[in-house]
Amino acid sequence: MKSDCVEMALTHLGAHMAPVTFYLDSDKPVQPYYISPWQDENLVPGSGRSERVLRGDFFCMPFGADSTPYNNEKHPAHGETASSPWSLAGSAEDAGVKTLTIELQMKARPGRVERAYSLVKGENVVYDCTTIHGFEGPINWAHHAVMNCNVEERGLLLSTSPLLFGMVYPDAFGDPAAGEYQALEIGAEFKSLARVPSIFKHQQDQDCSSYPARRGFSDLLQLANLPGRSDPAWTVAVNTAGGFLWFSLKDVRTLPSTVIWMENHGRYRAPWNGRNCALGLEDCCTYFDRGIGESSRENIFSERGVRTHHLLEGAPVEVRYIQGAVKTPQGFGRVVDAEFTDSTVCFIDAAGKRASATVQRGYLRGDSLR
Image 1 (cartoon, one colour):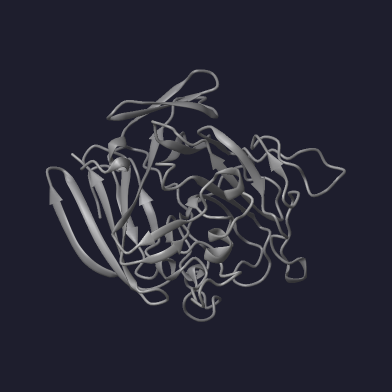
Image 2: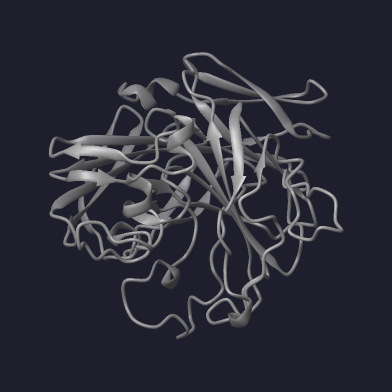
């Protein structure tokens, strides 16, 4: 689908969104999303694996693996939504708004999922509404956006709207015997991405607010967003060399956390083979990647008042999400704040420099695009 500013593609399997090109109407378009390098290789065995097409942003339901299966349901890792073939449901254009709709009949738990992607004339934004029909029972979900990290070391600057706290994955993240290594202290709690405890006791706290970093390691963090915001919560990655930032906007009632997956050549089994550098900025309602069972029970985050699952009762439920890109001025650094109007967002760096985009934040609360 293409507008005057944005061109986006979806995979048939899993509805992974990439490549996406923003600023089509400029002399320097930008493509912020990652695409895995094994697309023409036969390295991912079997079906039902999101790694087969791994790229860009995709919707996971349930999010993660079935570490503790719920109600004898058998879901593939990141759910059927991330790995099954979707069907085209329709397309439309009305008053400068283009919309593409796809759908998936679920098997592991009866129900239907519909996803509508919209592009608006003059905006460097993708609007995404996932509607879940007929589902009953607890479920955890996430948007799994993955950034292209083909930049110099620490060339991406990460920041978010205010947090309650953050935590490193509470178990070993990967198996060293299988060639998987982590750099951060298991289960460590932190207040700032700039100071995350290291797994190596002789090392100081690690700065996880810029990336790529810690080559040879793969880590997972979860950030709990501050609840009760009237403005959207946001996640930003500033590409300092590219002169742009990627952003996401969300309603914390639907997506109260962000999981950060840092994959810097830290997995050596197939299909990774030690060659991947990717950054997942995964807005979610989940307990890490532990699936429905652990996300629907009491856990470290739910004990702190952070929702880790939604309880569905069969009625349609929407998950609305906004992603976009903004060109930044020369020398623009780490974002420390965001200001909203009904039709704009302005990201502000530590030096007071500003980068603004046209965006309709009311979409997150159910407003129609215009």
